[in-house]
Length: 135
Picture 1: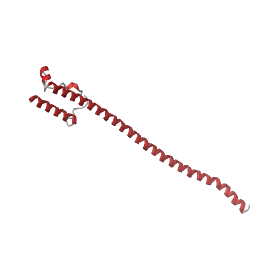
Picture 2: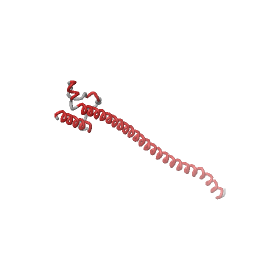
Picture 3: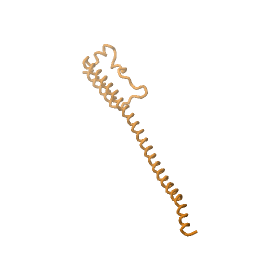
Picture 4: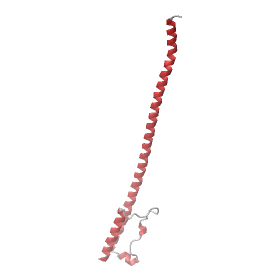
């Protein structure tokens, strides 16, 4: 055998080995890319869930504001009715000292918050009604 035949045989055997290593490195880089993309998908999924929770919180807050507006309108109408009838005139005839609390339902699961703007407003309303009755 000549040296040429030996080099040719070595080259022929080296081609599959080189191809094998090339494919292994390419596969490894593709797997790393896949894992990074999967991590990005997990991160985006968590961000989406967070945005969904935030949207739910905002919807609940909007509903709470609507409820508070409705209650404020009911209190305002009651005060206007009291003011038109004269301070305590209607309730004095009925034997009641103040408006019935059932006109706007309190949440049965929550204790009333005395520091809330609604409670402060109600306290101011009670004081102004008492001042009007004394005058």
